Length: 181
Figure 1 (cartoon, rainbow, N blue to C red):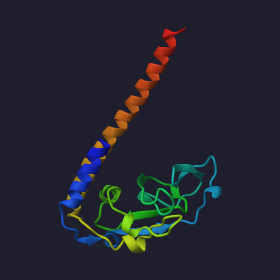
Figure 2: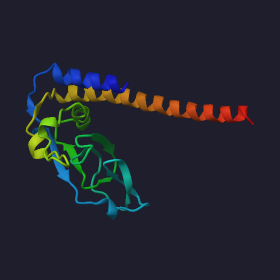
Figure 3: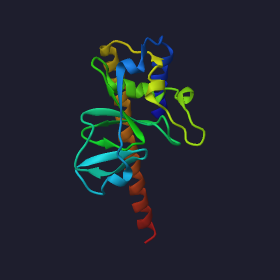
Figure 4: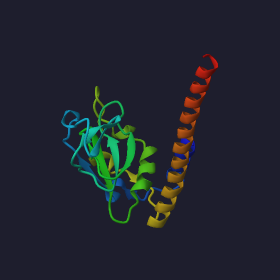
């Protein structure tokens, strides 16, 4: 299912002519928050390069956002978050401008080639000022929502299947332990 999502997103991107720059559709913000500033407990999650790294009682992102790793080995990896949360300084926060679907751009950025925009020898970096100039295909808002809904439905199905697989694995472990008692 992951390859299906990737294939559909690539088909959308490759079979249409790029018509808009990323910077025309998305706003980018950076955080100065460090992992050492977060707590083990709190109200709102704080995301880092490896997912949730802690919690705070305040937040800097509300609604939906795309977090993108801007430096290190995972540079260019994107994640989609909703609700009140924060990001550490290793991530950029992308939000859609009026008339654009952030979820559409999330799936587009999952297959976006960041390689030409990487800088730095030892620790690779990407900067929005560079890859924001890249032109991508952006259909009408209605079509963006349709693509996003389709890919999101497959994503949801994938998550459900992964949960079922985990539960079946736990059940198998339990039953095998019962056989050898």
